[in-house]
Image 1 (tube, rainbow over the protein chains, first blue to last red):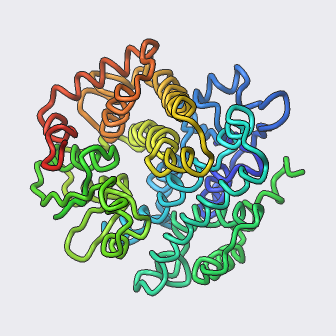
Image 2 (tube, each protein chain N blue to C red):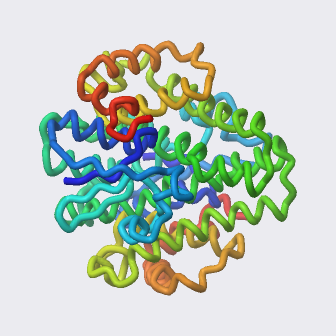
Length: 214
Length: 214
């Protein structure tokens, strides 16, 4: 298995956590999003991943770009430990929280969006940072409402083992800190994020611990 | 089962297609995104859906906001016909295509984003429409590359039965037409979209056929 990754990509970070939780070894192939005008836009990479986005996961003939599709695949092919444990209702709650991050926070703040704001719409740096914080804080507040005082929540987003929801939460929280988002109204998310980052699988997947970290 | 929906919401449209493909009856609860300053922002709705977004799916005590989490739940609880048929690799390809739309096209062009562009960033209508077309066309071009000349593609995005990928594609194509996106380089997507819309389950789920259609 190979993972085309960039240390700071939070979608790649998710897949790294999942691979580590499953105990699966993989080859790390760095793709630098800022060098050479963006190596993810290069011809050879786009052949692999027509979106020109990181990560790309390769398992023999299978090539997957989307991080959540990759993690679902890993969970189906290597069921233990389960990243989507429990009943269909449990799994629905886990996926719901994961997608709140993966659909409605992260893509809106991705590098390509920030570049478009800056270069095409001529938005200044303050307004660009405000955009980032607006969508991140609004999204995380909604997620906090989902986990706070819900009997499904445990040490982690769902129960007492890390799941797909935590895998999406932790990279987003790292981004939130990097962009100075206000996390003061989100005590449950802060607690869960800290609990996750204390686990070796999450720690090993963190941006600063990747071979291409700067 | 209840679905809080708005006729034009493409995330709600996805869930309607899935319910129809499964042959499941449901109560349609309209939520008007433009009336009353947006009914999805009202107190009673936000209690149900802290994101303040449409749809919300309710099945007894289970409440799910995210459309893909809802559809996965429906597929697990009502397995026939499968919306994610085949091997883990088949399912990965289907989810990959679905998420290309659900993560990287749709949320960037959602109503709340367009409003922020207009009201907070003071972007004019031409630039707002260009934004819409840019992300839709870029995303659909990548999806066209994924389906064109791929042996996994059949009458539909994956094989000869409609799957989660088609459920995401069709509402996005409807939006693309509504915003005059250029679909000329996407013959495979156009063909698949037409094949899907000929099916009663898709037709019945279309915006113009909802009780709140205007």
